[in-house]
Length: 519
Ligand code: NDP
Image (cartoon, rainbow, N blue to C red; front, side, top):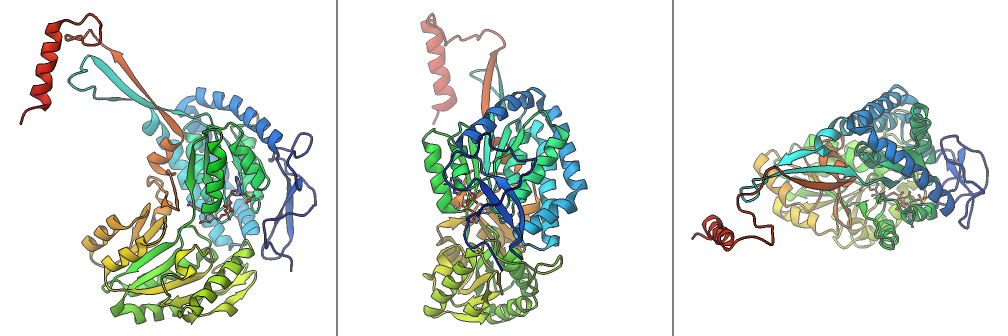
């Protein structure tokens, strides 16, 4: 059965109306077509044009024109269009979920959940943008009491969004929804594995607003992403692996184009001795194995208090054994979307076992590409690549911790810092651990709890990237701040003039001492 082992296309051509077709062909070297395949069967789903530099530049130019219209209609106008788009997506959710499922291989139920979460974010961003970004007064302070001070957030112009394949809707829409709501036009470069999802959502936009290319898609490979970085867009919102983020940042440095980088993770779960082990083990299996482990905030390392280690491992193992693999709507998880991820699993499991880890469930034989059965590794040396590097597969490492302090130290020893979770019945200890975990998000007594909370900013630290999507910070990420003061009346003490009097300076010096210099 053919499968995607590398991100390489062959040559078959069809087209899709939602994707801008290159004028005069792709102007980068390499194939002119990107094929979308079903990873479950290898079936060709559709082919899309590869946009080269000239085409990307043309699309960004069109976006500039639309950006002006989008800016001019204001927050209320944008909210109206975004709400209509949201309704169109929600009303046809099953068809979108089918495209997600076909391109990634994930079960239809998971794909529908992805649509549901995406719509919640789009709804929030469109409704809150005016309040978060609109003009508001700030206190001018005593010394400048004669000034009215206001701050507002203006759109950047055109934002380039580069997305991954694992959550091909939810993840890029975390940037797209917020960038649009903030008043920007968007050019979206999806992963070469999931161009159909991008074409679907942009198609829905075009159905509503055919004459205003506020949202466009450019399909292709890495070179198309590079062209977008060089196209003069006002910001790049990148989601993908850490190595690619470094390349994107280097390219963007050429033109001083700012970026927000949402990269990989190696999330830790801490399970204290007093935790509800039944609940924690259920969440552990979901967090580690859901979407075949291809989740940036998936649970990859679990640190369990020594006292409950064996019971916890037993519970996780029992639950993982019950998982059903396959491409059906209600299966637990599907195949590896990108075939070469199976090789990463094989390599990490082999390394862990060679270093003395125990395979509690599965092992090297669990990799039956394109499917990978659940693998649970226990007592894995902390210098194994299964502990230090992102896996992106349905495997999990379970190691021991002396207590939560020890767990936090081990969790923080990673260069990544995206998400983390803490399980304990003691609220105070949980909150204290959450404070000390070096990560952008933490969930207490659940996993992925933040994904459906649009008001919460999302992003990582260290190798997991920088900047924030979602929430008020996510709206501000795609804006530039504008501060304005307006003189309401002439200041009694006029210091901002060449004609100030010695008396004025005397009073100013007295005020400085009186306000700030008293012991
Ligand atoms: P990649 O880094 O391989 O690709 C991400 C995107 O970048 C793709 O659209 C890719 O295009 C494009 N790209 C590749 N090379 C370049 C380049 N030189 N210049 C510009 N763009 C380029 O990531 P994956 O698609 O494999 O996604 C998986 C990764 O994403 C994991 O590490 C995962 O943790 C991370 N991720 C992070 C999330 C977060 O929010 N922090 C959320 C989801 C995933 P093409 O596909 O055509 O090569």
